[in-house]
Amino acid sequence: MKEKNVFKAEFPSRSANEGFARAAVGAFVSQLDPTMDELGDIKTAVSEAVTNCIVHAYPDTYGSIRLKVRLSDDGEVEITVKDRGVGIEDVEKAMTPMFTTGGDDRSGMGFTIIESFMDSLRVKSVPGRGTAVTMKRRIASRR
Amino acid sequence: MRIRASCAGRALRLYFDGELDHHAAKRAMGEIEGYIDSRLPRDCVIDLGGLTFMDSSGIAVILKAYRRMHDIGGRLGVERVTGQPRRVIDAAGIERLISIA
Ligand SMILES: Nc1ncnc2c1ncn2[C@@H]1O[C@H](COP(=O)(O)OP(=O)(O)O)[C@@H](O)[C@H]1O
Ligand SMILES: [Mg+2]
Image (cartoon, rainbow over all chains, first blue to last red; front, side, top):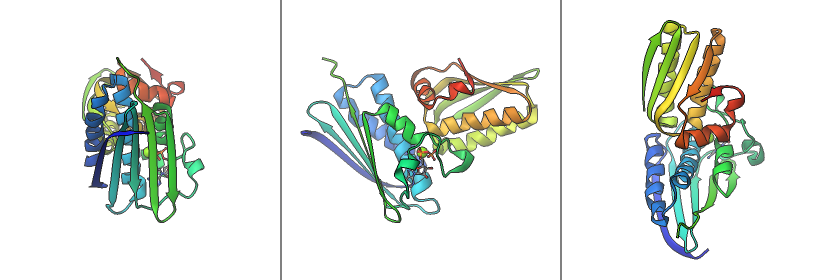
């Protein structure tokens, strides 16, 4: 991946920042001239990953969320969302459709939606240390 | 995110406007339960025509409304589903449970 442009942000795990994060990423990715659907899919994936930090990684405190977006020469978007929260004991189980530790306020469909909207999803987590979610999506060239 | 309601007989229609994410979901759930519990409708329709964004937190809101309606012996439908919310609802596969139009 030859990097064309990069955007980094760090913000506290306040729910008001969910809308900020997806809007910021959407604005940055717009320079690749994505379709409405491509943009909507990427913003949804960001919303899911950031919400997971707010709800699950820092359940009783506010912690820091780090967001990084890389755009490559050939139209690939790579987004990383990192927290230093509680971590995930069993990542494979966490990624199962409808699995949630959040009770009936959550649907357990966050990872499933990211997987269906992005070309790839990688989740690295260490219990007690935190979680890093990396998602990629190629923007089809409109030229 | 804003919710408006209209009621005709035992039919309740809830209009969602704006963006439904986790930040908005908590209040939305409270408002929806308030409408259902006070009107006790037989049919409840969630109208997504004015919704510009929704993620899996919105799926949880819809599922909660579905269970509430089920508990009181009523039905829930979701209507005017287009654009980004349509893609999220399709990906979540809730059409097996809830009628989506
Ligand atoms: N950043 C994170 N930190 C800790 N746990 C997480 C994180 N992201 C996801 N999880 C775990 O994975 C589960 C599934 O996540 P997801 O598919 O987004 O569904 P939901 O958020 O509705 O629970 C969560 O319930 C939680 O247990
Ligand atoms: Mg989630």
